[in-house]
Length: 303
Image (cartoon, rainbow, N blue to C red; front, side, top):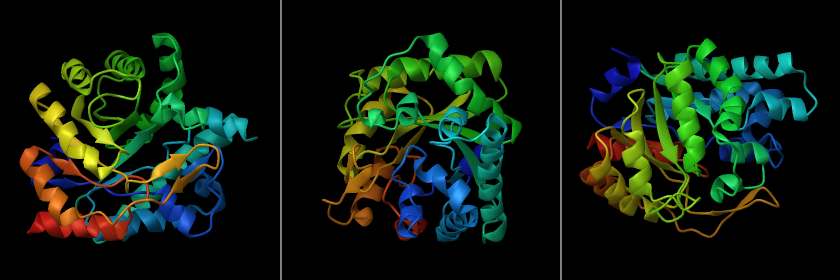
């Protein structure tokens, strides 16, 4: 039995929360093409400490700081290819160290695989406005996935995917070249009805239900108000676990690479029971959520 399956036997699973926003709070420059991966160079111990704080708050899954950490992104920033891969290794090691230093007896490490849109660093993960061939998507994602697998992450987090064809390319890549690896697939959605590229969420979920390696399907980095409508489209179309981790409801400005604060505090005590009742199995937070949010989710689920 895998560690992920073992976690699911314990009941609702809690994911961690925002990483880049927690790094930003410590005045590390993240408004650049590397975003949260900047801290792997500037302040790696901070990344470890944030992972530890999320585990201590009740999270059972840490998402490794590799969402933006594609080898080509580092090379474009002036590093060598060898240095790029070493930073991916470091990201995994920091998540593991955070788990070891925490109070958790059972936790797992998810290797983040962000979309091609994240590499573009222009907010395209919130528009899905790009189009490569299946082979080009696979060539792009193969390098990072291979390195994460080499580092023995417990599961791959295929997250914030706004583009159906890109998700299809990755699923086929895993099936053909990494058949032993488990993953979860989390889409980026505008309002909980369709992916940003226009694909209906219900259609996307039903299609990916056929892939045995994908153990959970859901959405992330969308406003909390979009979660319940999304569950209504996810749950009837899959027998996988349902994973959900909203952002804090703010709007991302791709030009300033900043989140615009325009939201009220999230009413987790109202929302989490609704999501769980509707079929959510794994719940956490994305951009601009904090360890305090994860602690509140943990306390609600414990009750």
